[in-house]
Length: 361
Image (tube, one colour):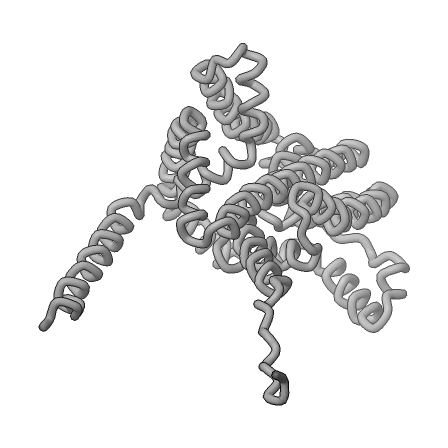
């Protein structure tokens, strides 16, 4: 009598067991989750380079993996070592400049500040008021806050070791993914087919294209902006140009942009009395700072054919929601969601047969 009735207890315990295993697995892998996500992003974005290296090495996958791993170490380590060496080389000069900061005075506001619409008069008055008092009074007011900042830096010093450990873990996981990339790709495509058939497989392919497009747009734009910004600093004669260029590259990758570095350098030139070079660097800053609004969306769209508004929302929204990794996760999520929704909207509804005519026959 109960042969056709489902076993409710068995189904309930089965769901609970699967849910428990899923939660336990996530909890165990949680310390490695961030490194794994970064590794997947790196491997997917650089997989064409991996295949090219393998072809140049006559199909030797192990040698290609070694080359890509060494390249990752160079990309991570060389800029860091160069920045530290540059800062160390300018340490004495920086200390002398900081020691004379209290005696420096800001020159009077240039005419163009007062000519600014709406805020020109207020900005010129505030500028001239600060120019009269100099940096001595400002340093006295900032002294308590500087102590708090120093304590925070000391407290966060341990994060540097964690960051290096995460970087090493990313390199190791990336090497493993490079070694078995085709198998992982086939598994992901099979998962997509299992979940949503051909549409799920297309979503997996689109996710890879979106990752490559975002990586192309973000990295190439960061290289262009930091290189042009560093060239402007070098032409204007700003010290620490090498270290500031490295810092601009990091800020550009983090979607902050080069404006903090270039703006501070422009202010330093005004403080130093080089108003002509400061005006040049200000114009250079505006040009370099605005180029990412054009270059980055075009490069991302070249890698993944998606609407520019969707790309912009994915990059900025992902950054605000998930941090730096959200730069890649945001566009991927929006790209997959948009593609699935667009395919569903464009799908023709099933034809409905006409009702039979009662008067026929």
